[in-house]
Length: 338
Image (cartoon, rainbow, N blue to C red; front, side):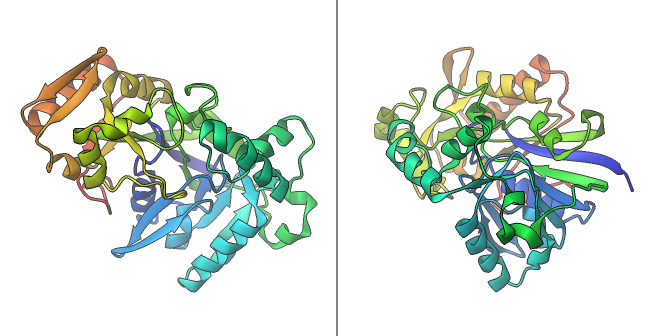
């Protein structure tokens, strides 16, 4: 059997863009044989609603909630203890964890990696302290341990086969990418959709790239582009409060800012996004002031309709690959996505 097509969902900001909602809704269509993660580890976090019940995952792909084979790809990193914890969580919730498979080339996060992370990257760069960066450091210095080296993972090893229709689930976002983010305040892997090809398919198989963002920007961790002073801005504080902006993985309060449309346009262009989903419009409906950064200026709008018209016009006029733009005001699903 061969691959028919691959759909990819990636983040266009700094993570926390409601990718989980999009992937969950696409997976619920039952049109896919596989849902795959291509990078990162349990430093990510997805919130999924299934029949109005909320679930959270950090490493295991969202296909598990719909009885679909769920693959952790070769450029991911996995911590044994956390993986087992997540497996047990899913079992307790009644999901079939035999569908979960891991590439034998996936690298293992050890306790020493976590200790190193806590002592270094967590303090200086605001990492999640999950051992991700030290694990990738060992991978690229060719001193790491892979899943194939540990009998613990024997029953979970993937046979490297993909077929039918494949959905790939991104972690973090475009501006956390190791190459495109505000280095060194970045993640340690490739968040752009081309990284999904590491799962073992050619780029010609890619059909749709679903790009996810919010109607405003948020950032977890340390980044000079998101100075801590933003937390003192009363309008932005209100926005973060209405949006319940706390990290899925760390529980940390996210720093909030107005949407940077210039950065969004660049992310759309480079990622090849052809279906854009902008979430959390319901949060802006509670706000008196609506603002967007565009062409290095902060522009204020009288109402949400005017703001969306401006955003839509900018995207249409400055990119040529957008097929559809969805605006979502629902934490569980996107209207007309499937």
